[in-house]
Length: 143
Image 1: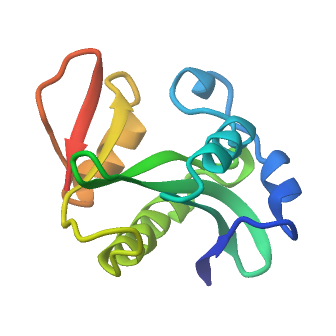
Image 2: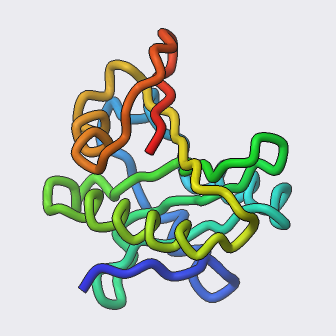
């Protein structure tokens, strides 16, 4: 069963073991960088491990932008050895359910950015209901 677990002192080292597939480094940051950002923005974000049972298979972070206000999904990734098994779509569904609880503020706006060349991720986000804004360099999608 796929679930999200808060990244904390008990499991953060597991996130460091996650690996991107060859060529994906240009699309998403490694969880090490993301966890550093989570520490800096700790009053407005929540990093999660994506789990299959007790095994971490991916990572995602939710951050709240108080200036807009909106929720942003950052750095979602599935370990290279576990891709293509539906973890991404289920994790995205769970992240959206978490955001609906409005843990940081009252906003129904959810965004994410995606490299325009990352066709696999774009397909996943489109299937979940995200639409592009028309920005060229990095596509910004709204839910």
